[in-house]
Length: 198
Image (tube, rainbow, N blue to C red; front, side, top):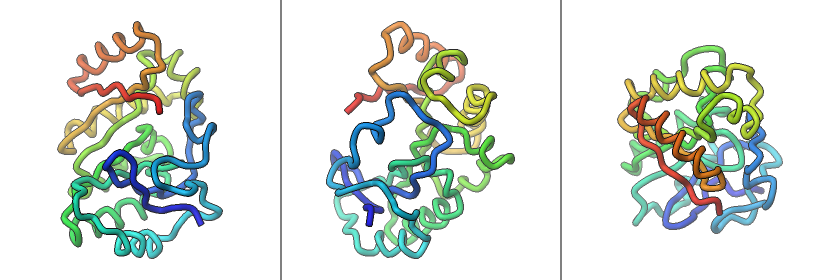
């Protein structure tokens, strides 16, 4: 069975699902089967809410101050389990919750899901991946034609309704794309973090 919780660089992560509505050219799951202390992050079947909660109850959260939903899939593709397990973790363990997401959940569900994150999620990290639509579509290869604008709209609404929102790009991008991404993030009033590609 794939690991539901795993640790990497002093952080604890929830590997909620292998479903994803993108096929990013740099996605780590196309190169290896695991990250950090996990044996494998490939689920034969995505975990149930009960299995996620059991994994949390078996984990020692001492020394960890943030629970990050990020595995070998897009965590919002399992939205109901995400929100219920995150609420459980906050109430029982008093831990801060972050989601690493592609920002396409509203397109995926055909509705605004951000109100469901309010009061549950402390921080959202959104993969910007590229500074413009053409490059974004080439790099991210999403299911949705309007993915770039949808992701930006999602980020703008998160900025208004959630405590913390950041964009991320991976340092494999050309320097000029990283600079252009920073300008776009600045225009939207959202911070940008450049992630090292492991």
